[in-house]
Amino acid sequence: MQQKTIRTAVRHWLRCCLTLLAEALVWWGCVYASSLMCGVRPSALLATWLSTVGWGLAMLFVATWVVHNNAFSPTARRDEVVGCAMRTALLVGLLAFAFLGERSIRMAVACLLFFAGLAALRLAVNSLFVRSRLRRGEQGVILTDERSAWQQDVLQQNTYGLRLSRLEEPTARQLELYLAEHPSVQSVYLSPSCLAPAEQEDVAHLCRKQGLRLYVLPLSPESLPQNVRSECRGNVCVLSQAKPPLDDMACRTAKRLADIVLSLLVLLTVFPVFALIAYVFIKRQSRGPVLIVRQMCGMNGRPFRCITFRTRHYEAAPSFFQDTGDPGYFPFGKFLSASRLELMPQFLCVLWGSMSVVGSQTMRPERYGEYRRELNRLFASGSHVKAGLTSFRPASESQGSAKADVWYCRNWSFWLDLRIMLHRLAALIRSTKARSVSYI
Image 1: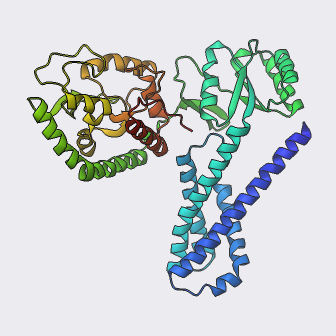
Image 2: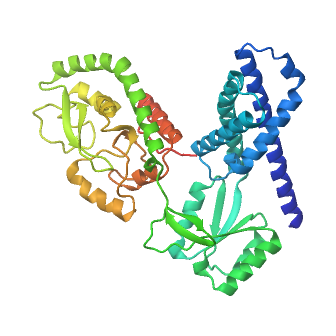
Image 3: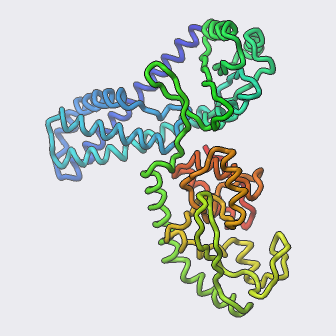
């Protein structure tokens, strides 16, 4: 077991050294490219490329010591990897201006290129690392009771490649027997509430003896939400409620800018032509207005005016049907409802700021009371998530359930929005019912 631990440490250091060398080569490439862009003769740089790579290694070593490289983290999302790479590149740029003695446009361009190059490199490394972990996986065992069994699902959901098994009798003796039958186990997760102090010591000695990594799970009272995070205040480990990504002003600004760009792209290209076609067909097949304005609300509970194309006869009675077999639909309205193109005018609401392209489900204000009670049970009230043209909806979740919206709120990222939009677009093209998104 000790040899296995040594091999793991050697692989880790070798991986870090190769990553630093690759990042130093990227730095050299950025300096070389900036020399070409600024019209500087790069012949001297070719002759001193070893010195440039050496300076890059030294600055990257300092920057990585200050800002940890999370490209090899089993829990880091892609937006977190990009953010960490940007902070590292900024620190490298400051070190370059401070110690290299060259404060010119060429060096500024090299630092800007290194911003993009380092982010692209770490994203590629992170993708390879995630694929490797998903392929190899990590076998683990968790010792917990029924009250804290939810921690198993949270760990597996937020850690790439982790597969946990829970013992029916969480004791040190049962763990020893399980490890003898399953030598591929690599980690042990322990909830202190399920074992006495003496049993916890036996588990710790057993893990040390067999070279396993022991993770002690924090105690989480039942009155606290499950999305808690641990932090150290001095030498004391405390729990606090995890901050959703959209509580950050920068994340909300990025999401809003993406909504504006996408809505303008649709409204200035596809929407005028389709709106003219819809106007002609709706007016020919049914009397009444072309657009319907309803009072709706989203996860944040703020009412807004939602605009859609009319799909049913204006004089028709309320529908008791669950699909387009309702006789109240006119022919073009059936097409609009089946293809979900009736929602295209909602891009106007996105541009105005009352909706988002990807967000929570849209509902009537009178139904928000029950929805709000479920949000309170899930400790997710006061969210910044707006109603969306489309939303994250797993096939196992019923319409109206708040669980999927809460998951989206706690796990939002730009990449998740992009995957949901691409999935819905593919489902629209195939004219099939959209299935759930499997986010990695």
